[in-house]
Each structure stands twice: as structure tokens, then as C-alpha cells.
Image 1 (cartoon, rainbow, N blue to C red):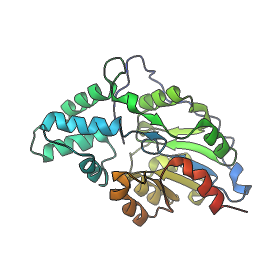
Image 2: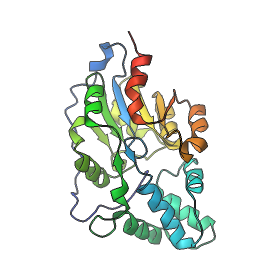
Image 3: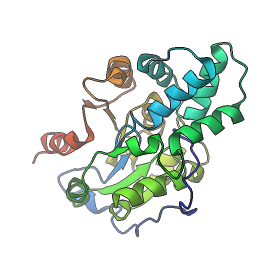
Length: 261
């Protein structure tokens, strides 16, 4: 699980709808483009530096009263098994010598992220790939999501940005038997299809490990000027990333170059 915050008041308690899977094999005959492109959400489709990242840092600062930096945050994200920000914050606070329970961390994280009536750090979240770009990609490949979010959180983002209908499959954390870095979610999306015909875009070590375990080609997405790229770029390459994009909207050009007729 990447980020675990409960929903803002009145958010809908339902699983994101998915489209009919009528396009599962449509890309196989189109210039060898991926049959399906699967996106992680946080850090790939959504810029969470001023939302989830900020919440995590401020949560640790609150309990420790220590100066916590973005660099330190990403050093934790470089470790396998810290896709879940609640677990990351709890472990971080405890390693700094403070005996704070998981439930306390979780409560503060929620307060900071959602705020009152949805006016918290969640408002710093920014969708990164335009609906027009998604539609262009969708003409040649099926599009899906494999995220560490729960469906309530995913609902909020999909509805806010009006992009739900552009994805055929939305794999949230509770729909997979095991969370990342396990490949369960990717394998469930593939539903028996050849993993080499898929492509997964992610930004963390756990994303890369899940892709590797599922034998799905992987692309990293890390801002060129960001601390995450300085700390994690080489690791993602070592784990098999085909390339590291600076932004998700560079994907179209990369595909066109790689799969030109």
C-alpha cells in the first residue's frame, strides 16, 4: 500500500468502476505497442509532493519535533516495503527513539492530509497526464491502474479529475491478495496474458520489484530535478527499468520512438 488515508467526509464508499474488458488484445497487432499500459498513481499520474509527501514529513515532525527533510523522506522510500506511508511514518518515528503507536500516527496523518471538510494537504495533489493524452494512448493500448491506494482514495482522485472512464481496470490495494512489492495486482490485471505485452510505469522500488516479479517491462518516472531521482534513479535502472522518464507525459514520445514502424 502506498498511501493509506481515510476519505474526506461524504466521499463515496465504493470500488472504482471499470470498463468492459473488450480491448484486452487489441494492441497486439498494432506495431507491437504494449497491449496494456498499467500506471501507478502517486508520483506517476498524480504529483503528491505537496500532499502525501508533505503529510508524511509533517507527521514525523509533529511527533519528534525534529527537523525532517525531503531528502530523509526519500531515503525511506528507497527501501523495499515502505510503499505504505503510515508504516513508513511509524517506523521512522520509532527509529528516532519515540514510542508512538501506529494508531496515533495514522490519526495524525489523516488529520493533516484531509484537514477539515477536505481542506488539508490533499488540495496539493495535482493530476499530471491530460485526458487528451490518455485518450491518444488508449487508441493503441488498454490502460489500467495498479495503485497502493484504497478505492475510497482512488474514487476521490478519479472523480475530481474526471478520468475514471479512461481506464479499463483499476486495481486498488484491497483488490490484490498482497500489496506491493508483491506482483499480485499486476498479475490480476493481466489475467493470464503474456506479461511481455504489458508495460508498467512506477516511481518506487516496490513498483519496480512488483514489475520484475510479474515479468512485466517497467519504466520509472522520476522528476529530473527531484530528490527522488537523485536517490532512486540508479536503483530503478538496476532493477530493470527500460528508461527513467522525467514526467509521465513523455511516455507518448518514448513509445513512438521505440515502436516506430
